Every structure is written in structure tokens, then in C-alpha cells.
Image 1 (tube, rainbow, N blue to C red):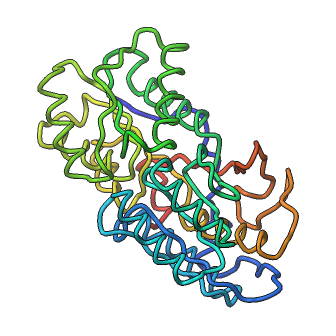
Image 2: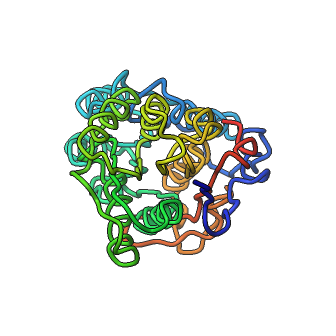
Length: 333
């Protein structure tokens, strides 16, 4: 089976985008130095290791005490504990990627009551944040991935969907967009089962893929959401010798899924650069602390966030990229 991603890559993480980590991003102006920790879902996985690069680069560019922390496992209550500690330290701002936005609402409310600016990412439904910054409109992104999955599957057959957490607003919005697109445009495709929850764990994704393949012997498509989903699915397919019979698309990074792109067990991955997201969260928090205007069309100084749109307190960029085996070497992270 020949699998190609339809359309053209947006290229928003081209050499110019990668220059963030190379240190060529312009230094934002600010009135004073601030302490701004970034709290991520889980520490130690490649996605958030890459985000740390952007946070660290922002510290170098500005002189802020910008740093990243996160729990050892994806657990909302562990994030709550970290944020409580940061409130006690009286930091200036907190930027956060919530595992469960709902679970963090009370502690983020306390942070704001204590005068701490809160900026979120991957949490468009969050209430207790000054701003949430998203790389793109989530429903559009999910629909885009479905278009690629449908092209790979010949627009027919059974497929399954994975999310890191059933409470993850972002992952579920991607899947909402994907399913809506399938129902609208690809009537000969059929979703099997429910949303499969993996807790951002590659082994869980692998085990769930094996279960699904046993339950649905005609299953020929997978769409993953957590960065580790497609790698776990790809491993399950390799063990069954199904690389050429099954299509796998989803959010990931070359460092996580590159080996499966090379073998064909994974057909395409999609992402926004988490380093850029870490950087723009820090920049947005600094702008709020400095009393700068947050306005439609503003330029946050990072590719994909050069002319943002605003809906309520949610800010959207245009920062996704399509990657296959053919171009993955352009994104060495």
C-alpha cells in the first residue's frame, strides 16, 4: 500500500522556526526580570524535553528566571501539588500545560488570587487563566489529520482513535474534529470502539492497539493524539507484520516515532514545535506582567505565531507541520 500525505506541509517549523533553539530569536523587551515556571503534564518525555529547550532559551534571551517542572507521571493531582508549591514561593507567573484543566481550576484560581499571572497551553476550556495560547484551532487540526488518514486508507475501512486522557480538552477536540470530518466526507470509513485512553504512555498505547487488533480483525486505521501513541501502535503493527496493511497517523515527534516512519509502521506525524510553544507562553506571561496590550494580529516573535487570532481569552497561532519519512530529517528533535 502506498501512503502519502495529501496536501502540502505548512512549513511553519522550517529553518526559521528551528532557529529558536539555535538562539536567533529576537529578544523581547521587558521592564524587569520575572520568575516564571512552566508546569508540564509529565517530566522526562521527548515532547516536554523539547518544550524545556524553548523555556530555557527564553531565560537566556530575557534574563528571566524561566524554568520547567513537571510530575514523573501524568497525574493532575501531582500538577496541583507543584502549583501549590509555586504559589507558596510567590512566583510572578505560572505557565501550565494541564493534564486535566478541570482538576487544576481551583489551584489556578488561588494562584490568581495571589496576584500570579497564569498562562495555559492545550487548555482552551480553562477558566482560571489570564490567557490560553494554542498553536492552532484544534478542530481544524484534527480534521486535517483525518484527511491524511482517509487518503492513506483509500477512504474506506475501520479505524480507531487514541487520546492521552479522556479529560484532555485538546486531545478530545482533535478527535472531535477528526470524527466530524470522517462523518462528513468519508462515509465508507467506520469508527470502532470508544476513545482509547493511554495516559501519554507508549506501552499503554501498544497494549491497547494489540487488544483492538484482536477485537477488530478488519481494523486498518489509527489516529493518535498523545506524542507516544503512534509509536506504541507502530510497534504493535510491526510485531504482527502489518506495516503495509494499516495506516497510522497522529501527533508525535521524529525523536519518538522516527524509526516507525522509516519502516512504514507509522505513515505520518503532525506536531507544533513544543519549544516554540514554551517560548510563546513565557513571552505572553511577560507581556501581561509588563502591562502590554494583547491584541488580534499581534506578533509573538516566533514562526507560526506571527499574526495570532483571539477568541475570548484563547489565542490561536497557525503552527502545525506534516512530517513523513521523506522530510523527518528536517526536524531533528
